[in-house]
Image 1 (cartoon, rainbow, N blue to C red):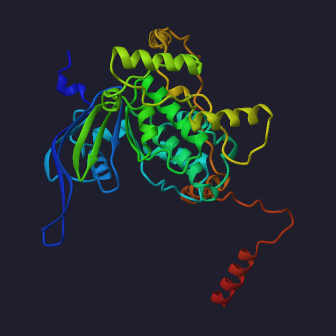
Image 2 (cartoon, rainbow, N blue to C red):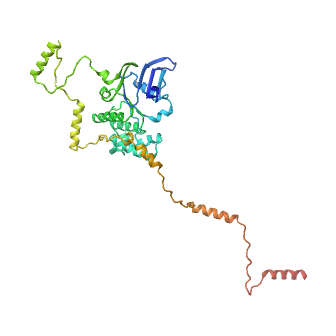
Length: 385
């Protein structure tokens, strides 16, 4: 059984980061002795205004900054351990993408960095682009994208390696209400499928909708932490929801509360729907009318590789792998192809290195005169004279 130590995805104890100047003098205390932990399969919120230490904390978790003091572990290892990098997906606050690549090339590039094979990269790229609503602009240059479209692509990039731990810094920055709603729904679905997510955002409504637990930072210190229900519960009031009441009924309720409990009704008002709900209702109505849009489409279903495997799927895969396969007939070894020019050169070299064959005697033609005999006779005649 795993110990409690190995059960924690992130554990920070006394975590402190002090930025110093050239002379090692303390310049800024960014994170001041904070303690928190992130548990498996939960969505954890990191909140706070600008300068509260959120980004510094994230950079220390990623191993980009070294803590000045304290202890920090990520997935059971030190943050700068290379072993944990393969299991982390990260979306920075600003999407720094290669503007001359298109979305397919961008995701393929990051897939290569994680060592994914070509078939896996191709399948995941298509699924992720459909999921974030960019499949119709898969061949457009990223430099032509709006900020919201770049954020969608950045989210797909953070998921290309199917990470166990996903770190998102302002994931809804620059997104329209449709994209914001889709990202929140995606985070809830990923959390349900076993992903551990660290979410940092200035939009408190986004964190409230998706996070299980959260930490509120200010001045580098933790000012509050706990579950959303614990932190947001109003212990001073009681809310009773009913169907619409008549004014005279409300008056009777007011008298009963005053006489029995000695309290008064603070306010009576009709419930309001959220602006996000109204906006999404209008958009859905426009979609049913098939209104055209040149922006990003609404996201599709969650990519298949991010889904948890169905029960028994691994067993079936192992059985299929272990099943005996018919032996393939032995193929004759193919003769190597030889460049014709190289063959000519080799043949010429062999001919030059071979010993020269003796020349066959030339047969004399009938009726012809041997000039050598005549010369001998002439020469001999001169000597004898």
